[in-house]
Length: 354
Image 1 (cartoon, rainbow, N blue to C red):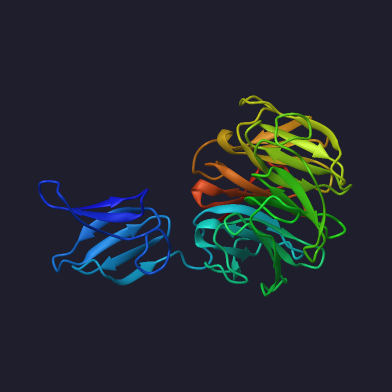
Image 2: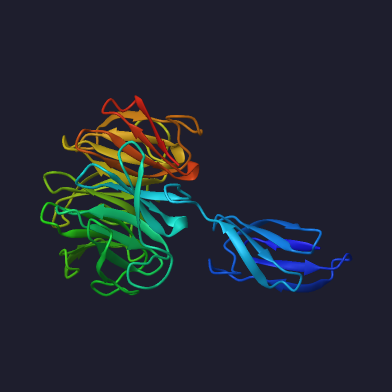
């Protein structure tokens, strides 16, 4: 009898009385490794087929439990776990797909354009890519939560440079998550577990930081998303305290809004945040499965979305971006798709990128 031990990323083998005999597999995405195995079947020949859920593939092992082959992985243009989204200079959405270990580029109507990155620890590779931002000349910046760094690519996806390491010093990170870029191409990074915002120039040189641990004004418990409006104001979502905090570009606290709940203006684990050209702020309200729009002072304006997998519904939305025309792009994460809404945001546009 074979049992998939999903959490321990292995398959265990027992006899008919439940006696342990063997095991195979280890955590990872390489040949013969497993990343949350779920399904399993044995062919008449004795070959063992394991459904490796989080790696989006099936692997085959022989009767001696040795790896033989695999297939699956999502093809280019399909999404496994879209986490974050940004808009490039041409108006194309750029999507971080954490479970595919890459960044995917699309046209506004969902046509696949290309990939940035792959799984690994080398330059231009990712282990847990989290958030993405684009500067004034089209360079793409990606945070990697597992590698504790930021990597920079040109507009064609060619690796340029990277910075960061694990730690608490200036320029070090403990789980960098959200990222945003201001009008001077300075790079603002949410350093989740430290917890703070760090600011760098476009070459990765440390400039300044702000924030400390706590629920008070200007403090953070679980900072996640970050956005910068046209005036240089910085908005940060704090997931655990269900609020949005607003700062000036130097990190001086200005105001905050939000509380736990599902009423208009309340939040339940907010993650992604974006600002449009008119100074409106859009928040991905993950557990309420909706998007809320506020003005720059935190006054509630509208909400749209509900739980589900139909057009215009969400299941755990994490990322959000707004283009120059006011269209809103939402990473509907647990539905593994991007949804697009027109400037009148309750109107769903028939564009869904799977």
